[in-house]
Image 1 (tube, rainbow, N blue to C red):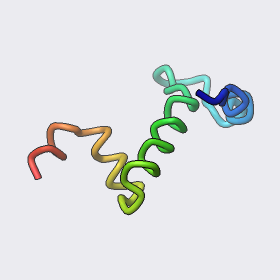
Image 2: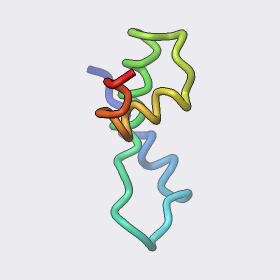
Image 3: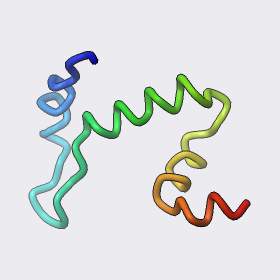
Length: 60
């Protein structure tokens, strides 16, 4: 696996100190790479909805 730890350092200035604990940007980036490798025709919004509401996506 490739080391994407520099992504966290690069994006940490854009993360807010308030609100819930943010998701690790490396996790999100790896998930996006998997999407591109397995289902490149899927739109980003559709992918986000599927990750956010997996039970709804399975019903379609």
